[in-house]
Image 1 (spheres, rainbow, N blue to C red):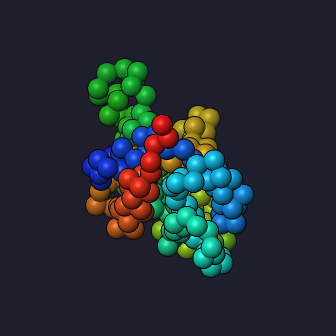
Image 2 (image 1 turned 90 degrees about the vertical axis):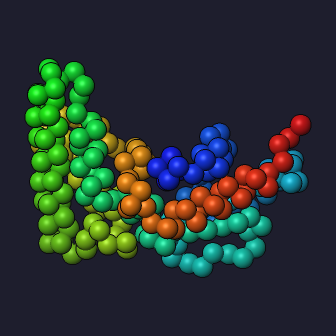
Image 3 (image 1 turned 180 degrees about the vertical axis):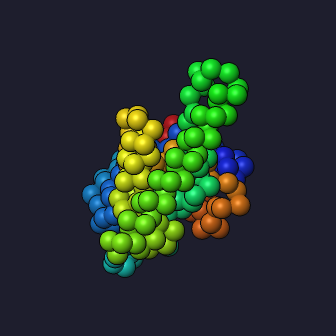
Length: 199
């Protein structure tokens, strides 16, 4: 999530140059990777944050392990306001003059609204729930088809692949940030502050 939006300087510092190793939603992978690194640096600090798991987190991971309460991290980014802000923010700056920029921005926002409505309706028809439900797998069931539809309506190639959904984090207004985000950032800050740099 975006620590800048919360103006959380300690988290910004902790996330400035993190060493990240992705293990999917498989807690036991920590033992294969982190434990090996700890052999080389016994005071190594780490933290693992998972999407909502289908099983209980193991208690023998030897590293703080947390999971999101919502289905996946994208559920914390998925708001109409964020998607409309994305549409406005991606209006090309080269649009001729401020009047035309406003017109293009308005067209993109309206196209996003139409796309949201159409994809949300299709999800309901297919029995996939609502994009605003915390249990929905929004990355696959909503955001992927949404951006495909949105860019198709604009007559453009899809510029928002699943691997880029993290870009939406900077557009989440402070008022929409779940308190859980601050809790996870606090845990990252704690791991960072407990770390001892190698000489």
